[in-house]
Image (cartoon, rainbow, N blue to C red; front, top):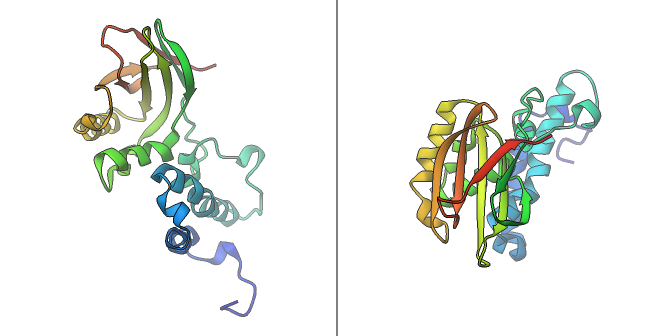
Length: 208
């Protein structure tokens, strides 16, 4: 409407960055969105902001393809970086003697939200180098619920930066938490335990 003529998405410089302020202003317009947890807010905005940028990058490649089939991103990291060759490592967690209540993964986006929440503004930068993750919410013998979250990283340096950043804020987790370095599926990894005794065996393996 401002230009008075059709505008080609591929011709707009950094469309995602210009779109974000407009969508973020919706927080003020809709109290329900503004009061929602940060992870809910970011999960709602991400497809529109970073998703638009991902499609724009595809179109700039010269072919007007839809983001399906071979162009379907496998992670939020791929959407944000436009790098479809960086495939996430699929892993799963098992806690010995515990009943699994729920299991899933956070992904690059929600790992960044978790870091911003516990480390502070800018903590999401520590998610750079994320390579995959999985968590297992479990019920321990005796009925207490606990959490194990395992993550793998592209490099040892990225993993160590993550350990140093989040490791300084473990008091923000309930029930006592530990964060340790590990080698997971042949990659630099980390294991966060929340409310899980150190004597409890935790296994992490590649997911088929």
